[in-house]
Length: 109
Image: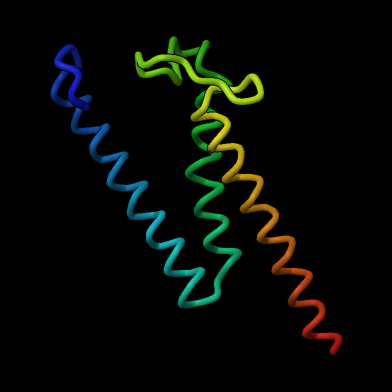
């Protein structure tokens, strides 16, 4: 967002994206901690971070890049941002699976 080569409108979109994602993350935390709505919180997390993965997978089709010009860091052969996004998606799926198992135990008890 501080790249002087970007048009002002592109920087606005970057700040918009960042504040939207931060807000969605806070809503997901609130849903998890105070409303015990783990499945909805997981859906929000999967939507946001899954979007990162989709954008990364198809980046060649629109000449995009996950890299921001910083030194490339990889974990298990994945760009760090893709690795983090994948972890969030997988942990969110795990949370849903565990929530479903917990609910089934309560019903059968």
